[in-house]
Image 1 (cartoon, rainbow, N blue to C red):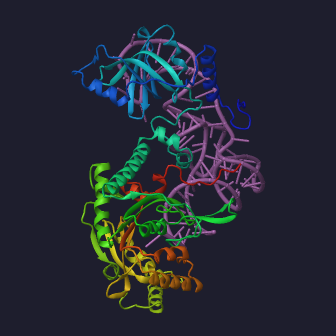
Image 2 (image 1 turned 60 degrees about the vertical axis):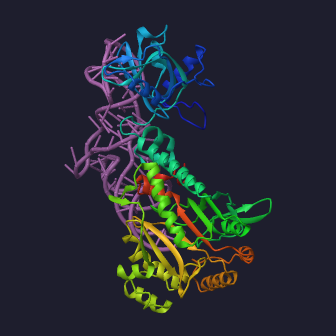
Image 3 (image 1 turned 90 degrees about the vertical axis):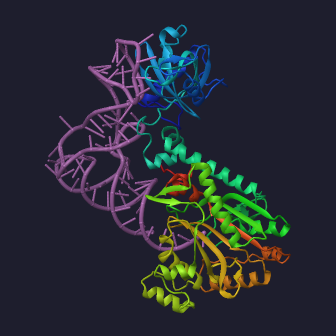
Length: 502
RNA sequence: GCCCCCGUAGCUCAGUUGGCAGAGCAGGCGACUUUUAAUCGCGAGGCCGAAGGUUCGAAUCCUUCCGGGGGUACCA
């Protein structure tokens, strides 16, 4: 019995038809099922607070009248009394509607209320026999009529595709989903407070870039009609933020979306939220101290503890975090000794001998990175700074004094994945140009995972950037850690999905 | 890109070696003035993701496609 209500858009099924009939009945009586505003004097949590102040046992808040509003999420019809659970932004509150306490036809009209509707209720806070905080209703009003039934009330919405495609249904039916995204929001606020309190200035730099820069990744390409030029969506915030240090800002940060046109996995999403910080007169040691304090204090503020559970392992984010060098960790975890395999050819042969699937086009840096991913990364469960990377892997970081093979760089790892990345930033423009040239040469040899030369950035750098410590952190991954979610898609409200084809 | 798994009522899920399509929740009708996954009674609800094929007979077996998940490759 499918009739089209809105041709070309929906097909009305029986359940929807019943709801539309109720809506039309309301309109026939002159009741607007979508009134322009509602008055609310108390949230669900505030009513609960009032009732908690009552003495033990059943009772009422004498002389107190409240107005609450929310979505109808459960309903228990008892004959001449009906219980309705309302959900608002603060939580649930039970409403008790009794026939002899309501005006005129209001009790009979309860049949016009369906699960999923928003209603407002005026009444007296009370505690029931079973101890449940409740609003004893004197009147109710329809605030918004819902035309579709909500998901199953006990199990919620379980289908993974629907949870992502229709996140609002997931949010309205799953408490855990609301918790995850509340924590996400609070964590980002806490990061801002932490950095603001340290004198960092939050800035916004362009998302549309002339060319990809600041990282090695395939970009999304778009077209700028007014200029008739192609642009790429940024893959990194780095080079613009450094320009601001050159301009004289001493501490800046940006929290924003990066876009990398690459694969998706439990820890990769094509658009992801990155936070980068740059601090003048700091180096990677200063940054490491800040990072461990920042992450642990955010956890403490948002969760009340520095201990989190991720993939069945308890992780303590409290400082100090372990520090180990790239070369030492490689030896410790049974990888190739990079002091022995010092050039591309020997390292390549060694990795092949060890059975790693490596590309003959890769440079030394990429090979070292491959070995790191194999031997080190999965082993770093508790928070760890991996220090001092091969120079070939890090064209934007400053050389480590006394060792021309290494740069002052760390990545921090938790639960076997990378959380952040920091450099003592390279500020020698001639050295920077030479490093870019090496990258270009690598690209010419077939390694396409290299950074592009950015002439405008080099011009800026030639004007002088103070000694600087820079840091980047994947916010989505931080939220995964804080919420215990093992898939990045669970911490992104609207992850990308394929179009549904007819 | 490749491999594996999944898709059944609005939602959550059963469905045996191929033999008439099932339950709970939601929704409808009825009973019930302190329930809270309310309870009880009666009815209703389906193109079994789509299209082909095998078969007397397909939700079930085969092929292709669509969508999702997991792995892997690629990728900071």
